[in-house]
Length: 594
Image (cartoon, rainbow, N blue to C red; front, side):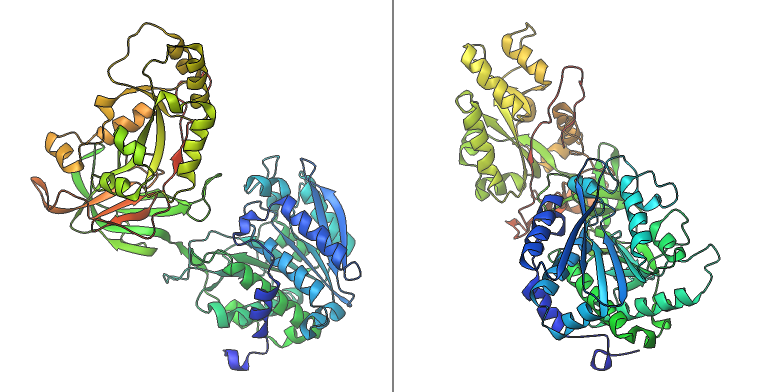
């Protein structure tokens, strides 16, 4: 196998060129349709002689779809990306490639591309899906399963471009599951390649052999960077998929799927796409791809099992669903929700049980520890006045609390003041989840207070707090609460003074779940599949009878991130969420909050 020293398909200068000409955002999903269009129009104005920008169609919702054409060579390459709206990696790479060719056209590599090829680039086929960051288009259809029926305008556009351009080569650019492994190893797949077959028998034709050579070039180009993290995409012939049909329609087609990489380098695979695409195009422009060994592609190990992002092994699990401690593993993945802080996606529980045959990006040995759900509780008024303060957060984390309820006095319930309070927390690095509850004292005192109270509920306050059980007699405030569908809670039931060792001694292991249910917090307070990964670990002395070695947890996880370890806040603590109630109507009595 070729080494980087004798690898004719590896140009080391591309790595530096990429850093110099990268204009794509740090987080690939931040390249929205509007942002992409601004970049494309700016580049067209800057390089009108090099770049042809053509509106070739519209999405279901009327968003423009653009084709970029560069170069004047005899061989044509057509590249299309983001037909799945939540697969933005290659779109970013194409933008950086266009920028490079526009502003470095005199570079020898750029000259080879522009003189030897005509490059057609469709950076974002599914702008409606990209706007929502969802796989499907606005019709709810998968564009990449529409090559036969052509029920989507985006699918019809893609086929019409293939027929109009008749490209000799095609690059079908996607993102795959970011947790797949290379073969039966535990190495994450960074890039997977596939030469789509033309039939169920996977007939080997001359066109297929040419595509395998292009895929081999891509492997050789990426070896110096991610050797050991390259795989073959595991897919058989799909008669309704565009890659397979491009192959059948006469375009030499290669599928490139971006997988996973280290979490703190979200743009690294954009760089790998940039390098793979340029090296493959250079090999096509010069004809050098014909010398590549197709066995380099054929010998790639397949995508295999799926990794977890985090695996807690050999824990002893206890909650009110498992009242008798059981040995178990917990598998977590970090999943981006719409509106999430993208630098810290929320950890969710995706599997519980005997997971010893699985692996993960990170494994924590939890043997000899009791795993419990994080507690939910109300901070004192004096502590609330000091928040956000790490010393206050630390006090509650040491008691096992992962979600804190902050009381908001009547004077702070005015719309502007309450919004300012939310913003103050939002600008802080939160090691815990934070929600706000409105103090209900004197809410019937004046009409102006009614309005303030209603404004704060509308802005997302989770519940209304009372000193004692509320009189059943309806009041104006209670009518407002019912309108916004907010629960009432008492200080006595929600105070955050007791820790897990005290609660276990009392036999009250259901308190986290009961409080979550009372607040209608979906996915908190339990250890179930699809729950947010808020939990605590206590060193165990024995399980029969159940005894803990210490009164404070050895580790606390909030949204899957370790925020407390050996009594100290960790550096990885900016993962807490501000939990606000979703808008509700009176006919939605079980409105949930995420």
